[in-house]
Length: 587
Ligand code: GTP
Ligand code: SPV
Ligand code: MN
Image (cartoon, rainbow, N blue to C red; front, top):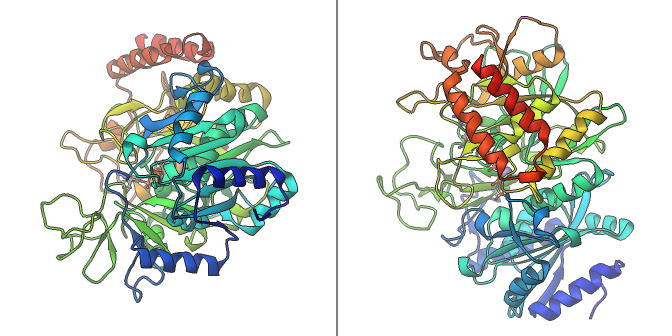
């Protein structure tokens, strides 16, 4: 066999995979533009990609997935470890032997007649000590094209691997796409991922959720940092002061939108800087502050709901060099999704390639996505390339809850903030298969992504409180409260800056009268959030900012039941917070 790398371990692994999967050809990706263009031509010829209108959308392509393969499949995602207890009740577990046996049988000969791509990638700026590399082996050209946009992929990543030695191994094949033979397996003790039977984003772009979060969280705990499902945004005030905020919202609950929001009309002089929209790796600095890097280089964003009134920054970056997955196409060959324009244009082709008619359901799949380089975003900042990351002023948790959770509250201290994160609940969305709109616990927006026992993860979070002096303040937000007719009470999107301003004011601590202490945390006083220029329903702010004691007593019971699943691993500090809140709600 040919020698393609100085890293012996990598060469040996690739040779083993060739023996197992029996591809016709092996291609080591260098990440060049010409390589990308060749792949695109091949995919166009094979029908894997469809070219969109080259005048309005140059170098934009549509990919249609198999209709059974359009979202993450959490029930087919496993963490394989020596001890089952290490993964906790929050993960599906399999023994290392069984996990390997199950998938290796499916990988056997699965690349016959196909090309195997070896994809070296770097998560994070190529020259950052905080970045980590991986190699994904895949038989999907679509995965290669997406990895080139989403990561620093190719020659420079391989150089780094050859210099540093260590890398995460990720083996992927689309297999036969049957959900019965689909598994997303993680072996954290071996820094290994094996994924078969899906070509969808989080299941197949292994640098993203599998490496940067599931294995990342495992490594982060061992090494004293945090790997989180968070956007990173810089908020610049008219005085030129920039505050960086990291925010964890569950899948399809507003990270991309908040990361690149446009300040409302009334907020002259405010600027938003996008660092990341999905994942943050957070490290303590020598000054006791936390510093965040975005391990990704692109956005794999939700298309539906992206419009000129909601996320104009995103819309503007999607008219060239973008891969769309499962959107609809107009008769002019332009991409379309619900929320882009109203009414829906006549004569469209839906996400499955069928003629679309009014009343025949959504034209774009609710979890249709765009893949685009972060550099195409007008608010993307060069600070995203800063090797040491950006210092965090605040950490914000949030969920999608039509009831109960107020628009915003601040935690009383770090410990209570960790409790607020650990008790997040949110309505399920189309980002994962299964029912949509069901409230479930999604601590720190990491339910699908924490690679080990949640209770141990909360202890890890709590340990920061004892160790570091200048930690960010922790908040909780909810943009999704509804009135009894199902209308949103809060306008959301760019107007969320109004809430973020309060968050920053609280961190600065200059105004002592902008909050009231309640059992669940500090809430804004009724006029502390600037609502100038908004046309809110009468009483909306009051409803958004009140604590319904009876409803919260019920919530406390639900959180207690949830924490009980973690048995002896459960940190007692968090149960202590629950007891305190319950006591204060009685008072
Ligand atoms: P993942 O990529 O799945 O991790 O999702 P995300 O958290 O980045 O979600 P995204 O920003 O793409 O938003 C998902 C959906 O929520 C889109 O349809 C948005 O239009 C909608 N959304 C985002 N922000 C708001 C908001 O402030 N208010 C309302 N009502 N909807 C919002
Ligand atoms: C999510 O589901 O949280 C995503 C998309 O960001 S995926 O990459 O598929 O996980
Ligand atoms: Mn996500």
